Image 1 (cartoon, rainbow, N blue to C red):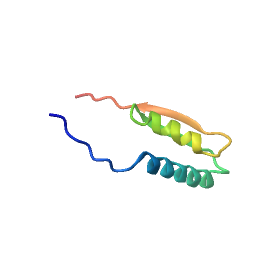
Image 2 (cartoon, rainbow, N blue to C red):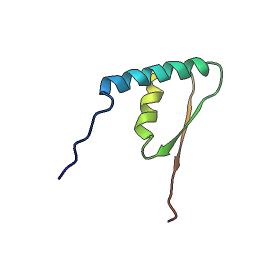
Image 3 (cartoon, rainbow, N blue to C red):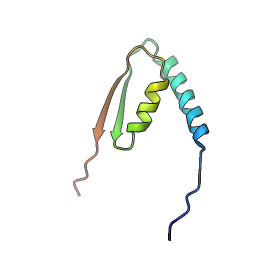
Image 4 (cartoon, rainbow, N blue to C red):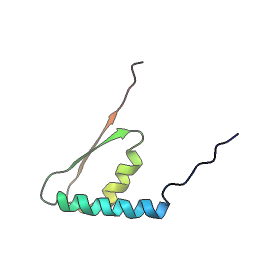
Length: 70
């Protein structure tokens, strides 16, 4: 039997918050270098969306991969 999932935030709310974060980060780093580091694979789409709303001349992006040794 499939579990029903509860929607916590609508797509519109997520988009709005992402824009707000982009504005805040852009203000904070307008004259500083910015490096975004995401954990693969889950952060890839989020970081891509965040980069689209940033208003900065240059942003460096990198990713790390978590590997379980267990």
